[in-house]
Amino acid sequence: MNVAHATTLSRWVGDPAAFAADHWRRRPGVFTPDGPLASPFTLTDVDAALATGFLREPYMEMTGADGPLPADAYFSARSVKNTSYAGFADQKKIRALIEQGSTLLMRRVDQWHGPTRDLLARLSAELGRPVEAFCFVTPAGSQGAPLHRDDADVLVLQLGGSKDWRVYEGPADGDWQEGRVEGEPLREALCATVHAGEVLYIPRGFPHKAVGSGGLSAHLSLTIREIHKGDLFRSLQKLSARAMDVEARPLDDEALLAAATAMLDHVGKAVAGLTPQDLVDHARRSRLAALPAPGLPVSLSELAAEYTGHR
Image (cartoon, rainbow, N blue to C red; front, side):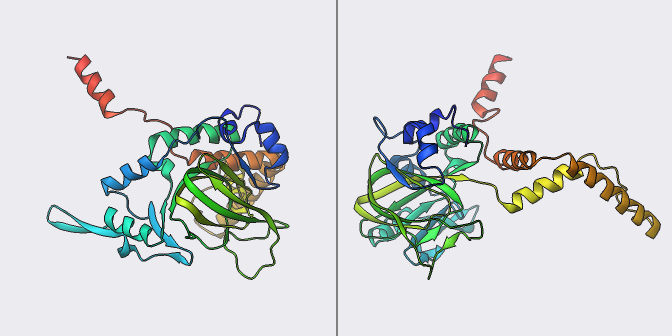
């Protein structure tokens, strides 16, 4: 991980070089930043988002220790042009479910909240890896998700309340699956209560679970994604096929064999010129390119000002 200029990361973990040496992909840890927690998204922003009522699947979900709740328990229909459309966030239902012990999950905050998008764009550029944001709101005594692994390194920014975390040692090799963990022998790596203003780091693939402990727990999870075999294979296809001059629809068997020969010759030469680092770099750039761009190229207010200036 390149941390030479990771000033954004340093807001949460202190010296990024020390973090990379002591914790990154090695062990979990709890950090106490200097001053107020630097979070682009707060509980006030949660309220504002819910107040619009416009959040829908898959951006919002209610869960419990055993998994997701049925959508109709927290979504309602809206009427537009005399037509009923289902699946809109219902603020009253959501609050009632939280009071009953359910967890509110807001997905990909970076896609619909401008300050989060812009901050994560800077962090992604610093790390060379895509970073996404998820918000969890959990009442005291409740568990928002079963024991599971994430296919990402996670920074948990505790916005309010507190949460009891248990994190277990990660997999021994690359043959593992994300999601629920059941029936595996696990060794505990960290047991800690994370309070408002603190930051928890969970390495990629380390099983974990959490229970709200004090007040209404709210945290923003920043998931630092890494490429995998599928990403490398897609990049290999793109790089080896670049500038390939082969007929799109050969007309007969002879032409098909000629096209196959030309294709194999081209791919062989292209692959011979690639290094493993070329492949990794291309795959990471491709993942970064899929993130929402910071800011807007042209806003309507700017466009209105341009029209006004032309009069």
